[in-house]
Image 1 (cartoon, rainbow, N blue to C red):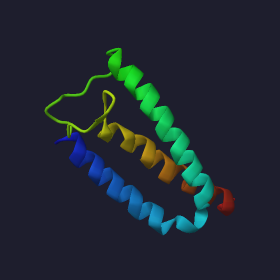
Image 2: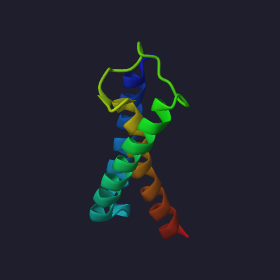
Image 3: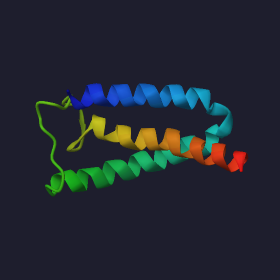
Amino acid sequence: MTYLLLTASVLAAAMIYFFLMRSYIASKPLVAALAVMLLITAIFDNVIIATGIVAYDEAKISGIKIGVAPIEDFAYTLVALLVVPTLFNFFRVRL
């Protein structure tokens, strides 16, 4: 399985979840957090990959990169930004 296929399936599930839970999140803070977190991800993922701490099989990535970080690597940040705030607000309201 390629990283792109895995990423697409996880993002699809996260987007469906986010769509169902959209009433539990404010969009303006989410957009601001998304910009900051993607910038931080771009910086630190490039450092981690460039120093050799993490390596990707070139045959399994799409080839699209931001610096040396494959685009698939940014999906972890996107999923976290979609799922964590909705879970936090969902459980905060329920308690």
